[in-house]
Image (tube, rainbow, N blue to C red):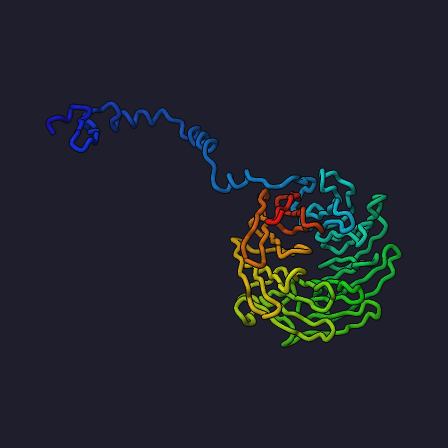
Length: 411
């Protein structure tokens, strides 16, 4: 290495230039480098790096596809509903013991529902949007007249599990932790109760015909109630019922079929006229042996456009089943557990929200995702889509509700 003091050596054999560093050059040697390092403020350098570089999560949060963010809540937003008459208003309920009715177009508060003693987990409009009901976890239910912004009725029950309006009358139903189902005429407060064994009423729906209600219970039992007579029409339990608590229910448009979902990982299709289980759907093709081994069903729904149903599972699977063949048609994967699903009224698109804070739309015919909407910094706990399927409002654990304009492939 006779030429070590030469700073560089050029080799032109293959027209390459190779630079040979002089190892005797001590200009930037270890001693000098150590001296230089002593002068560096590492904390300041780290802060500078933080400003210049972002983690993947931080970069992801910069994407916000929403048109509007509603930020009045000071705690997690647990529930959201569109007003069915005009689709111009949304109501949200949250951990801050409040519900707000607000305009989707500009976020202006129309009505602040106060006076609750616990987190508001249920908030729904009546069929004509003239009334809104808000219910908190402790069981305090309030009804407000939207036009006059006045509270017109309130009642306190046991710990509240679900709350739903009748589809064509000012009648409100609620299910409680003690197993009772309550029904009131609003605002008179005329009351009827549907009593069962002391087992939590976990979910309930009024059938579209307005004459019957289906209720799911913690022990896996499903009951159909005659709302006028107050008696139980069908009881599905034991081997025909679920092996764990009911989590969700859905009815088809003509009230002939009901879907039930449970923590046992199974979905049952029930004929409402006979009370018979027509079919059972599960990802593994059989019942889970116990709840700890099961993949809980979180949401179910009928497609109005095709003979399909959708099932949202806690492991992040959206399953599309064919009602005609009773076979699994598509398995749509999510990175996080699913919370809720909703079909569009007149298409094959189904939307899902999940614990990763993303709203997604899927085409049930192909099983492909057609769009996704980001902007939340925490999980989405609920969402609602308007009748025209042009707008979605989401409720999230980041204390916000967001308005998204939905896109469709044929738009």
